[in-house]
Image 1 (cartoon, helix red, strand yellow):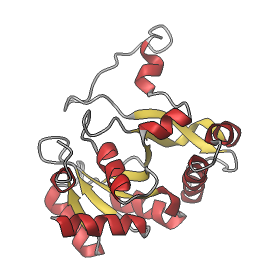
Image 2 (image 1 turned 180 degrees about the vertical axis):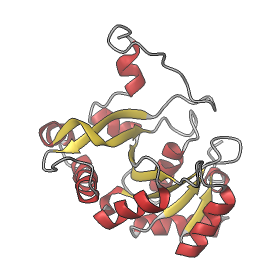
Image 3 (image 1 turned 90 degrees about the horizontal axis):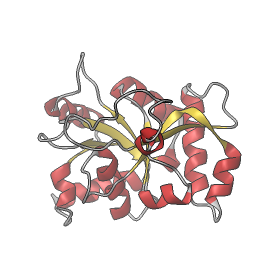
Image 4 (image 1 turned 45 degrees about the vertical axis):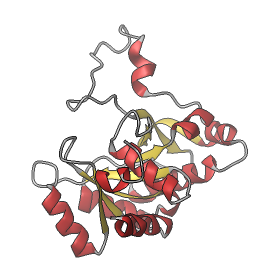
Length: 217
């Protein structure tokens, strides 16, 4: 198990994909993930074609505070007249990790692979600036096509967002991860199918339990 985790950390540090499965008792889904600073149009295309879910940018709560990012549910909770819809937890009980969606100012529509890769890369660069909030406000626009997810910490939530950010922490790299759900025919890819995909592509397949062995209960 330890060797498997080390392989996943090395893959993230080297800009490679990892297949991350959250556990049978939760979503029972696998996400294709990589570290945000390595974003390229080719990686986004691979996510779009091989995974097929929603491509998102996960960041830690500490980073979100520096950028003054709100949770989307908090932002609309007190505005029932503006957003007349029930705010509900997911079927497996979690509060959503979603914040706002953004585009970088230099993209055109924001949705092509090269646009999304640019937004991801620029955001990853912004986060390590001395004054990230100033640059974030100057260079990014909302709404956009890159959905931001804020980690709530594994002690509060054990979703792909938190698990992937924990991997970044263990790898000693910035807690900025790009992730996308892996879909099959009309449903999420099964665990078996995700394992087969990882073997075919020579990628590390990692489960929640492999990460929780590091002491997060």
